[in-house]
Length: 69
Image (cartoon, rainbow, N blue to C red; front, side, top):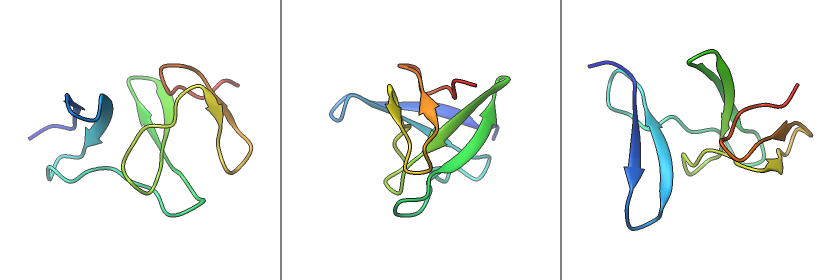
């Protein structure tokens, strides 16, 4: 299987699954950064994409979860 986005209707949250169907997730206070379709996205310890915020490392991400350079 290829990496894929998954939208949870109940949570209203996007998650990203790797090629082993495992949720991409970071650690507490340390997001996992992943390049997806030429964009760099940060995921928290629950597997949720960080959107429209400043990550714990001080990086700004837009409403789609993409890093703002």
